[in-house]
Length: 405
Length: 130
Image 1 (tube, rainbow over the protein chains, first blue to last red):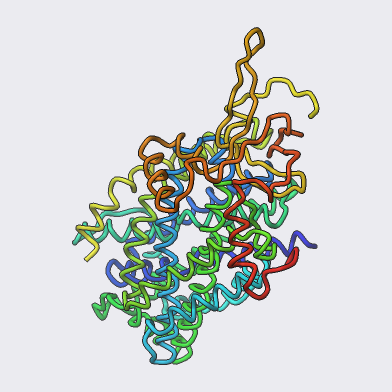
Image 2: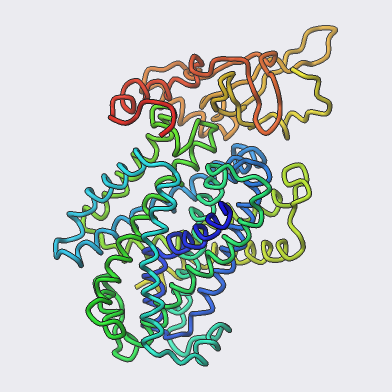
């Protein structure tokens, strides 16, 4: 019974994990500018993330250790330092974007500018981390994130062309503006395969005390959870394609997204969008602040757990405290959530090789994985994701410059 | 420690996570010191933990950067480095267990300082589990 509960929870967590400021913004931009054409990029991102989460979860369940812990131990200080800096910088930028996302949702609800909301949001987030347990962070945001199901209802009520949507799962070249098309494809991939997602998942498996008995739960959670989250991001592409694209509305401010679900769902659509944006971004804020603390504490071998009182792991608690407060600064200075989001999603894509490629060695190391090493399907998937990550590393910055405007 | 065969220093010991006798994580094996006594085989004598030792493994630029920061803070070059005799090792598995009290080690100075001066003063910080 407990396991079924965990599976249900894991699937629901897929929404909180997947849907956040990055995936909402990039999906809406893709739908409004290229209709369904970039659906393949989202599908590729969802599948890649599902594989990476399954593997980092399996690694944690079998070895009882987190991915970061093994990354430092097996690859040494020098490599770890490079990976640490890359993931830290990218995660901090995504954290800034998430706080901006919550602030923007609150601005849409109250009319008070997002800059005023950044510090209160950061302080509230810090209070939840300070007092709450891992279960509260994980389950609370997951349960509230169920509101996002309204996106799927909205997309269906907007009457998509199912045949055209199905065909969009196969990649096709852009009819015009290729720099922008590929830039958005990279942004979608960066938003989908953010390193914090699988680092948080792997740390969570250790926090929850997973053993090899949880390998089935892990597989279902990683697969169905991401499918669920990805479907809701797909709903944003579909609705933006049906509502914004015909009106030639290009998204250059987050506030424009408030009208996304108004035509299929009426006035309630506005409030559902605002609430979903607020909750999913707040959930991601908590998860990313924790991920940054996990990354540093596990890398240096400090005491860490969200379930311990802060004085028991004071370095760990200090890291998430400083991270969440520092991340509130750009939004407080008035830098918009959308510009923070686009920059951080592209950088996120560029950082992937540092955490994806080492997995090939770890997932095939019999000393770590015993008889649960990767099979051929997982290895083909992991090598393909590694190749993808190298391509993203080289193309992201040029595309940011050419197509980011 | 129980006898263990085929322990590989780089694979199994270097960079491994360390736990003290209370089961608390206290850092990683940042370096190992070897002792050569005439007429005897080379012996692993000490586990080193701390930023100054880590910096040496990263490169001279990191040593210089750390040195500059230490000079600003009026710290010795070896500030915060713990030297634990290898004989304190009680077990080598996923983590290495040491028969020491981690709270008293120089490498735990920052953890203690933050706990005593900042984190410990904020309501809700004290106790075991949340």
